[in-house]
Image (cartoon, rainbow, N blue to C red; front, top):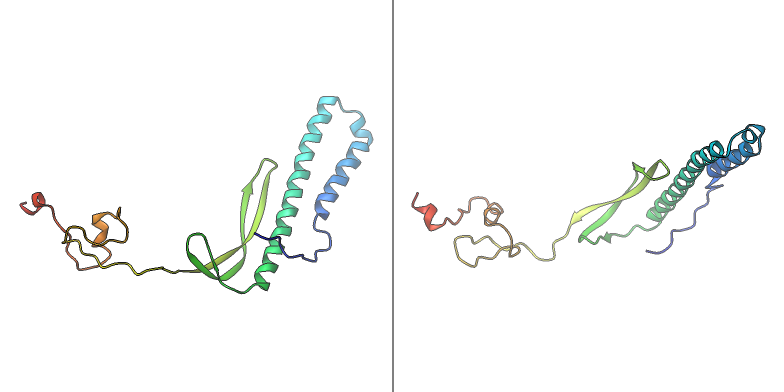
Length: 161
């Protein structure tokens, strides 16, 4: 995957910079001078996680903006690894992600489309041994379910019942 297109954002990491600046100001203040080493370490670890979480959130927001811009610029269908052609892009899908630093919100684009089959599904011939099926391990009970109205092949033991 290539790099994202450049996006014009005023200052993408402004919130992280503000948090870091306030942490530095707190450590320079007289209240921090009265803390023990253990209390200072605990406070720094807690506030440091907040800065890390905000850095991650700012990065994910920047990535989402670049992804949306790239989706608007490239209007051609894409084929996923699962063989589905995605010819529509929906923006603004949100979900929360739990990280070691805290919970962040992830915004992504979703590709939508329909499955394209390389070859048509063969006809169900369950009455005949060696019948064609979409794949060798396909269960016999599902073979006839694909073609409504086709009777299933019964075993000789079940036929006498």
